Image (tube, rainbow, N blue to C red):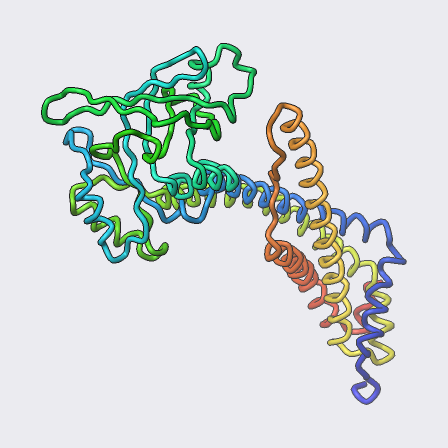
Length: 404
């Protein structure tokens, strides 16, 4: 018999594999649809996890500078303030690239005929770049021309009509510097009217205003905290250790980012488990299809072997069929997952814009995961065809005719 056997060409193997889509189109479609639903479910859930992670980290890290910037201050129980000498010592640390002083004093702000008591922060122009509180245009305007930034709560103090825009209006501020030794206060005022550049929405903090020291009649005598930027992300830990040894409390945003990333990774894994469960159900459905196909085609297999088709070709025929189904299921699943994500994103973004917010993407799918999903679907198809392929490769023509 071996003298009459011959190997099928790849083109013939593919053509025979596609025959099942003509003979049993409904079954093939349902099998591919089942796999597509499983892959699509995984895509939607994982994309949702990545979307949540992107949104959360985007809130924590608004600029690259803010990621490697630390807030430095003394413990409240120490009742200490940071002196100018200490600022220069911190600037001299080799791995420190930039330092921004933050002074905070009680004060008074006036706009038109109204005045209100606020906490006034006196900051360097680089403060907003290091914290990422403002947009790039607002940061550029503040660094170029100075002015004042106020909180949304401050607006209610200095303006009777809260619906009126205060941006561009001129105000005057008065600060009360406390003498650490005598406990008395020394007044400092703005040398001229300052322009309100932006409003920071913060309902949880008391009313505050932020100005640069250049507009004050007297410089702050000390500072409440500092923003210290490391040379790069690799030196954040080293700078933090140095500052901690000096008795400071150091709060690094990168710690929040790492913690948030760990939490979001756990959420993504949990969502992935639910998706994998749906995928397993789809894989079982594909395996059932391949087994049924094997049982229905025993007579056909017997004829193929009797005319010289090799065991390897018969095995490859089944593996090719299951792999093609897996591939089509993966492509269909990626398409379904992408469309569902886009539809939900459109609905949520439209609602957010209607309510006065900004459009955003809740579903984000990395390219590597798209390729992984298709590859996983192909592997599931391949493994689903292994047992039927093994059975047909070991089936003799005589046994096939007898079973038929």
